[in-house]
Length: 164
Ligand SMILES: COc1nc(N)nc2c1ncn2[C@H]1C[C@H](O)[C@@H](COP(=O)(O)OP(=O)(O)OP(=O)(O)O)O1
Image (cartoon, rainbow, N blue to C red; front, side, top):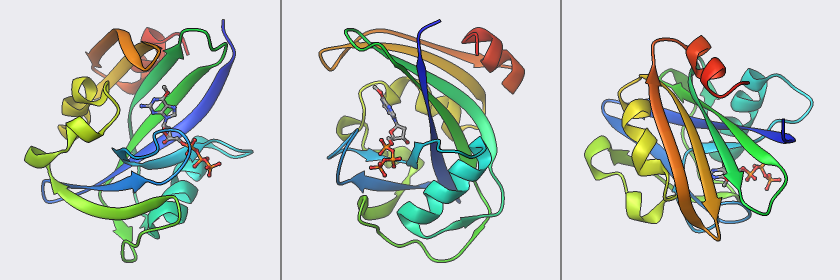
């Protein structure tokens, strides 16, 4: 198996709206996305809670693990494994951060797919409708050369599909 780097990605939802941030630096700079980052010396759930708080000041009260995206980049020897969570209960007031600025709520119908990672359009429908999913996305020079998106009956199927 190729070496892997673990990440979390959290989407906050409220009444058919989703909270997104405009990334100011690093991976995905200049694109809209949910909140998240690298898993440090911690559990996936603690990473998700920490990143959400650091990037938009919200404290998650629930986190639903819905899917995993495996990103493989040709010519890079480390795969990115991104664990995707949704959050519908939280405390605090959303605020922009150094890494996500501005942040704003988008109606599910007005998601700015053209200003997001190109693979998002394929798997977001699963995430928006709370269905388990797995994605194996292969990039070359910023272009998708393969994007295998599958819906599943449970989170266990997600893990087995991606051999995690
Ligand atoms: C091709 O790889 C990726 N594609 C997409 N669409 N999204 C990815 C890829 N690799 C990681 N991600 C997601 C996962 C995270 O939610 C963010 C990136 O997190 P970041 O690198 O900013 O992690 P932090 O720990 O917050 O970084 P700092 O050290 O800058 O705080 O994108």
